[in-house]
Amino acid sequence: MNQDTVLLMILLMSCVVLVTRIGGYALGLGFQKTEKLRGILEVLPGCAMMALIVPGAINGALFEIIALCLTSLTMWKTGSVAAATLLGLGILLGSSLI
Amino acid sequence: MFGLMFGIAATSTGLSRSEALLMSAFVFSGSVQFASLEVWNHTVPMTTILISSALISSRNILLGLALIGQIPGRDNFFRVLSMSFLTDPNAIATLKLAQSGDTKTNLIAYMLGGGFILHVSWMVGTFCGLVFTDFFDNDQIKAMGFSGVLVMSTLMVLFAKGNTENAFPWIVSGVCAGALTIYGAHAYLIMPVCVVAGVAAYLLKPTRNKPTTVESE
Picture (cartoon, one colour):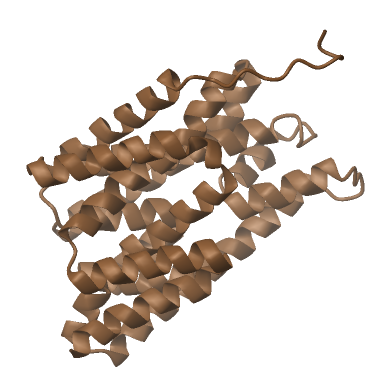
């Protein structure tokens, strides 16, 4: 991407995020929230994240897959973002030395 | 921590320092920024990045809906301004305070101040991450390029721990993404197809019958 495109992309992304931030509040003033809508909104981000994590894992090298598994496991067990991400980062850095 | 990781991931993706800082300043959303880096260098249309940003930040709509009725007052300008700093920790802290019955604290100011502090720490974290990469050579920076996926996996674990009921649609979306990747589908197709599959799985999932209580009878 050239610099103009990058800047345009950043600007458009910030607009999209801003619309969702203010939009929820604005929507709630005029709409009756239903259980179904609430459920869909809870499910959407996770589905989108899975669509990015899984291809990354499949296309990843062995060390990257190991780092991913250990990071997720550490996060699940300890709930510490710092411990999980530092462990993953350590594995990635270690793999570059081998 | 996420800010630091974003700085590292942005460098390995090829973003310049000013671009990474600009993205943190304007977008100010960890999950959206990491997700965009994942497809940044692929030949995907701009709309794919924007659609994935909208899908991931759709959680903000839920947070906004939860804050309805909790933030009193009639000053719409400050309401909108405080909502523009909306993040998970900020919204949860504001909701907790609102539900505690504290009438002395101005909730709009509380949310605005909290959001501003988070924004500053996000920017400082990004800057530290960008500086951190100076200590490594190109091979090591390239190896750290996978850190975006790692951070997204920790966010996914946070989602899953907080809401195990939604595991089924997420698994369906993941299986779909795996199948499409192995099949060799283009990156811009994977996201919408998986999201549609996940939402369809949620809508088609049989709902458990709630036990009948004396009160409901």
